[in-house]
Amino acid sequence: MDANLSQAEEALTFEQVMAQVGEDYEQTQKELKEIEVLIRQSSAEVEKLAQRNAQIANKLRQMEANLDTVPRQDIKEIYSAAQEAQMRLFMMRGQVEQLQGKQQYLERHANMLRQVLDAAGQAHPGGDGAASSREGIGGEGSSIVRIVNAQENERQRLARQMHDGPAQSLTNLILQAEICERLFDTDPVRARTELGNLKDAVTNTFQKVREFIFDLRPMMLDDLGLNPTLKRYVQDFESKSGLACNLVITGKEQRLPPHAEVTVFRVIQGLLNNVREHANATHVEITLDLSPDGLKATVEDDGSGFDVAEAMAAARQRKTMGLITMIEQVEMLGGEIQFDSNIGRGTKVQLTLPI
Image 1 (cartoon, rainbow, N blue to C red):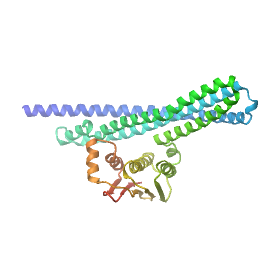
Image 2 (cartoon, rainbow, N blue to C red; image 1 turned 90 degrees about the vertical axis):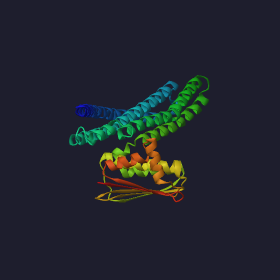
Image 3 (cartoon, rainbow, N blue to C red; image 1 turned 90 degrees about the horizontal axis):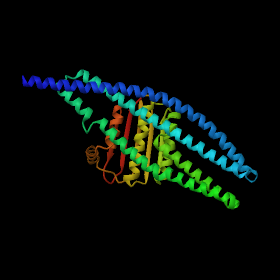
Image 4 (cartoon, helix red, strand yellow; image 1 turned 60 degrees about the vertical axis):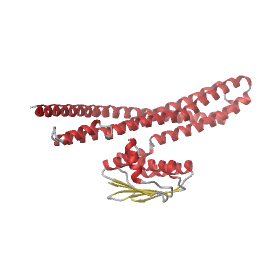
């Protein structure tokens, strides 16, 4: 009697968990529809702001060509309008990027919940399948928990990077603008010099923000696809890291599903970051081959190498979004990723993905 009661209570708990998963799935689908509307609206606003920014930039060029004849008040107004237009455009583009990132996360989350619901429909409520489902949903080692924890860590990293980079630069721009404003009435010659310095500072800040947005999520990945985005990223990575990089792309150029392009790009990005931070390498070879049957990518360095089994065990213990999550992301798409490395002889990572 007690055993039957215990099984009934366990079955009821399983049903409750599955009901919560179902509600979460429905809520996720609702949020996806809302985000789709917001992305359309925000993208339309970005187009309008980009047009306005181009118009103001044209006025700015005309003013600079006739700087001696333009009244000081007009100079101040045009520069203020240019800064405001650029900042609004940056903010809106950043908002679109964040929405697209959240959309992709929710799509993966919804897919995972759908798989849980499908698997639960085939498992006996009181058997091992139920225990496995409950562990997969709420256990500390589950993919969902690791993804959430990793997102929070990434938000902290981005917040620090934003504070130390663009935010600090914008603070300096405000101070420079105030100096120019005070000098216009007392020393116009020096004011013009400071205005030139301010223009250079704005240009540098603009470049930093563009790099920040590209690292957050390159918009050209959506517009142009994986190949051009990867070429641009490898060039930037080489110039910033000082590592000699060689990228070879073979096969027929073609667009992949967006989630596949994002996964391949993020995995290669993560592997290159690992090389820069840990490998002590001097050269990296990146290859990408696209065939009608599938995609094959390889990242190979001449660095110090590592013990693969030990690194995997450490990654599982720390529950980070490193090597283990790369494997999970690729396997969710039906692909495979293999790590070949030994201490003292470099590392070779090969990724295969069906198309």
